[in-house]
Length: 494
Ligand code: NAD
Ligand code: 6OD
Image 1 (tube, rainbow, N blue to C red):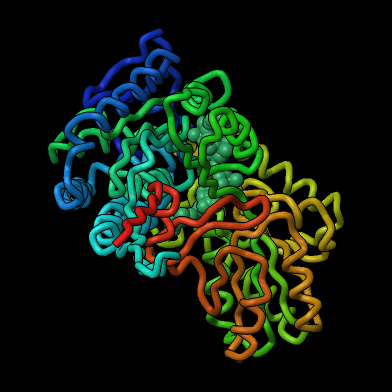
Image 2: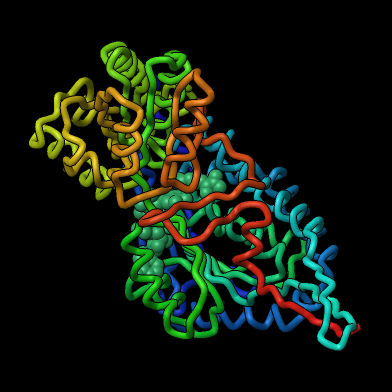
């Protein structure tokens, strides 16, 4: 087996405030680890309350300065240049993302980094082509008025991000925020600070005005995350992460009645009907379960399979799971590590809990047998369970690891009820060759996004988000503009 080779990224990661890289003003820093090797690869400068206040003030000044007075086409030109510069420096972004996450290079190269560029380019297009509303209104005096809308930036936006797709999820917010004319202060995850920091170089290279894009590093409570959400000069907060963190942020946002957009957790069902093309279903669901080592909010941790194909599905999913190995980072079968020792211990806690709750471990269930320093990272085995009750903790709580429970079902109504019986409502996937059923069951799912015979197939123009504990609001295409702009109606008596 080829060993994992970590890229040589060993440096200090700085805050980026008002166009300048800065150390934290209190001299505090925290270590940054490569999750594949467990080795420390750098130090991250932690932003103090004063640093965060400086970043917010810089963002406000930029709004009141050159950025705020630019035309849409001037902004679009700069944002398109950001996309091109990310593409030009894709090797640097790739090295930074792989170092922070340990994820397979193929995943970062095909998903994370290209989406970093696409998120800017797509929202540059959306803002350029966005129509407004106009109504001719009959007035009581027998005349008419013209009502029409204009969109204005909301102001300074706080962007708080998780660690699973660091550049992708951060730019998914920053792209539309800037396209709409806002300025941003980004707080990347403490686990994955590098690509957000690197994007500062891109902003300077394309001539983005100082203060439009700022990055502050640190943790949540009592650190940069809380300093940012508590800052009353932040106009709105967009957040991706755990549901519990969303609740804490929402309390801060209540002060000053500030708007929030939340993309939160999920416990997403996959439903396989007996008439499915089983090759497609196993291939698609094995990605949905194991890709990014299961650290995908859209990932499938509950699989319901119609009884006639249940045994065959379980056997084939076992084989698929066993095909994923911790190996060479360039191997397509490479299953990366979890993000941290803490997260690995949480996932292994659920692996033990599954057994306590009566699971049969079809495959996996622990840590792989690896030796040598290159394996000192946070690996777990891809795991498939059967025999779990739908009500078990493992089938209800988000684990965020490479694992799933498989449960048989007999009737369409039964599986719809099982799939919808969750406080989360992020996504679902349905596998069937009967398209009437595909449409019918998809419409019955209480989720923000439902895929039929696919998973994580993205068109950035579409509405994306979740219901219930999975989030507030929808982003994507024109839907992002609802959050990142204020819509003003102007009524002109004709
Ligand atoms: P997390 O909620 O622990 O952390 C996310 C970010 O919030 C980090 O930057 C963290 O420092 C910050 N934070 C934590 N507490 C805070 C506080 N009190 N105030 C301000 N900021 C605070 O999430 P995570 O562990 O980084 O990411 C995994 C979670 O994210 C999973 O639940 C996953 O489902 C979810 N997620 C959802 C989506 C989606 O689109 N719905 C996408 C990716 C990840
Ligand atoms: O593709 C996206 O835009 C998106 N927000 C993906 C989320 C992935 C969650 O882990």
